[in-house]
Amino acid sequence: MNVLLLTIASILALYGVISVVLWLRYMKTIRLFEVTDCLNEEAIYPTLSVIVPACNEEECIELTVRQLITQDYPNLEVVIVNDRSTDNTGAILEKLVVEFPQLKVVTIYDLPSNWLGKNHAIDQGVKHTTGEWLLLTDADVMFSPRSLKKTVSYALERSLDHLTIVPDVFYGDIFYRAFLAYFGLTFFSIAMVTRKVGLGAFNLVKTSVYQEIGGYEAIALHPLDDMSFGKQVVEKGYKQGLACSGKGFIMVKWYENLFDILRGFEKNQFSSMNYRVSAVVGLCIYSLITNVYPFAGLFFGPLSARVLCGISVLSLFVAYNHLSKLMDISRGYFLLHPLSALLFLGAMLNSMVKIINRGGIKWRGTFYPLEVLKKRI
Image (cartoon, rainbow, N blue to C red; front, side, top):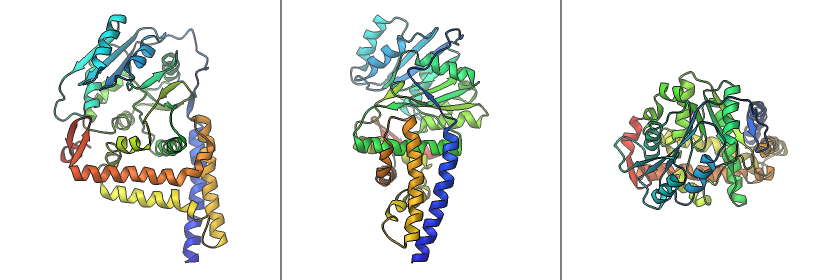
C-alpha cells in the first residue's frame, strides 16, 4: 500500500510542478484591463454594434442599457433583443427608447424549432446591426466608462478577429468566491490547452468573421454557446485573444448563491462533455485524483508520500497566488480547493442525471430533447 501511495504522490507532484510552470507561462499572455488604463485619444475606431439578448431581465436591463448607450464610443449602435419576456423588461425598454431614440429594440414572440432561446435572440439581433464589429454580451453585464474604446483599441492593436474577456464578478460570500476562484483556474487551464474560448459576458468579433463562420446559426442548439462560438472562430483560422477584467472594468453578478450555480450549470455542464456519460466519469476520476487527493494525502501514508502531496498542494497555491492578481479573489481560497472541486463535480453529475432523466434540457420555460441536441454537437 505504501508503495502505491508513494507512486501516486510522485506522479501528482511531477504533474503539479509541470502544470503550474506551463500555466504561469500561459497566464503571462493574458491582458488585464483596468479602469485606470490610459487611452489613445487619436485612435480611429470602427463602427461597433452591441447585441444584448434579454429574457425576463427587469432587474438589470435598464442599468446595462444606460451604461452602454452613454459610452463615449463613436458610431456606437446598441441593439437589445427582448426575447419572449413575461416580466417588465418590455415596458422598461419602451421607456428607454423614448429617452434614447438611437436605441434599437428587437422583440421576439416565438422560438423556432431547432434553436436555443439565447442563440436565436443573438442571431436575430445581429440581423439588425450595421457595425463593422459586434459585441455579444449579456443583460446583466455592467461596463465602466470608456471600456468599449479600450477593448476595441486593444483588439485592433493586436490584429485580433475575436476578443473575449473574463469579467469581474463582484458578488458572493467566501464559499461562493472560493468556487469562483476554482472555476477561474479551470477556465484558464482549458484555455491554455485548447486555445479556443469564449465568454457570454464579452465576445467582441469582426462582423465579417461572424458571418464567415456561420454566426450563431452554426451553433443554434449548443447550450454552451459562448465557448462553442469561440471554438468556431479558431477552427475557421481566425485570431482570438483572451483577456481579464480588473476590478470594476467589466462586471457581472453571475449567480446569487451556490445553489443557483448548481441550477445554472444544469444546462451547460453535461453538454460540455458532449452528453457522454463516459466523459463525465473520466472527469470525476481525474478531478478526484488531481484536485482532492493531494490535500487528503497530507494526512496519511508514508512521510515521503505526504511531502510529495505537499509539493502538489504548493503548486496549486502558486497558481492561486497568481490568479489573485488577475481576479478579485483571495489566494487563501486555495485551502477550499478540494471543496470547490467536489462542488464542481456535483454540478456536473447533477446536470448529467437531470438531463438524462428528463430526456433533454429544460431552460427558461422551453424543453429541448436530448436526441435533437446530440445531433447538433
